[in-house]
Image (spheres, rainbow, N blue to C red):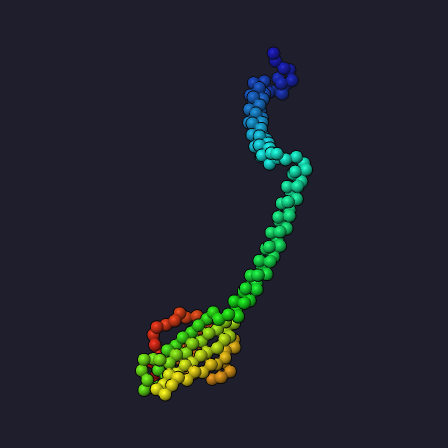
Length: 177
């Protein structure tokens, strides 16, 4: 059985037959792929809808929206709380600088000390306790944004620098010559 049309075009019917077989195989592979995806989607849908009708599904969705609204309110409150806590922490003392020294040459043991206590804005105070044979003298100086309006002694400046730059407490004792 020969076709006059195919003969006129110069096409062998065997090529058309092979082309159709390849096309059928490709279409069958695509059908299997689509069928597997459909089965997975159907299983997901069935597990989602298990025990639910339209009314139950609507209630379930509305309850989830309610939970989302509650979570949004909690998140907003948490953000406000974190901002408030951050503001409070900035006002608390968080930087310290300590320097021990001999205030007077006749005293030994490095009993005098300076402690600088600063908040997050480098504001706070410096406490200087100078020990002598006659007694202990303490001085308190206010620090505002890392600066004092009263002149600072060498040890006080060092304690302030340690606090501002958050150096760890150094066990080396400064000698006063």
